[in-house]
Length: 279
Ligand code: AMP
Image (spheres, helix red, strand yellow):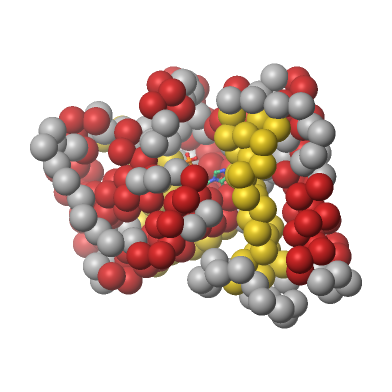
């Protein structure tokens, strides 16, 4: 696997691949890789001649400094995992490679910036669009792969791509879970044994909604799912909503193929999110 650290070098390299008629798949990550990230690599490998992963812990998308400081960065292990997965190229830039000191970013995210994740993490999506725009410019990929795990982020990136008319296809891929249903996340390493058990309430509440979607009114579904968080020590629910999967507005009635349930909660000092499409 080749490793590039500068935008100029990777840009030239990708352009040459595309000139040679090769399709290029891109998987942006913040590292601390797990099987969820690797599923995106596998999808890209199956669909492209060439696969590029990026690892960059993007400071502008962290609204909580402590979260940034303690974000796991096992880079040697990540490189091994990418090599074993057959990833062709890793883009591993420094912060100074991606940002100048006096930079501002004014892209108007619109209402998605203020709902759900946007409401609980002010400025988060501004940082996300800022870095993804830079990555798409440096790496003119054919297709970029993202996880449904960060569903709202995917919608924001779709909007960014459409606004700037960036010539890249986007794919939203299924959530990879542990055997017990817990969605894989780089932040799971911060959970202690009790928090890890408590965190199962995320998938359990989503499963409850999915299983009863056609049997109970939406408000009853949400209220009963929220009750599952009550009494769990050190757990605080931030939001649990059933939304239209195009707009993220609260779903008004039970209809097939347009709903998604989204949840976020704190487990001690660790914030986790999860979601489930309600087909
Ligand atoms: P991150 O490194 O957390 O920024 O995630 C990089 C990409 O991997 C994003 O598109 C995430 O949505 C995706 N991802 C994270 N966790 C999972 C998972 N459990 N299953 C599938 N994709 C995931």
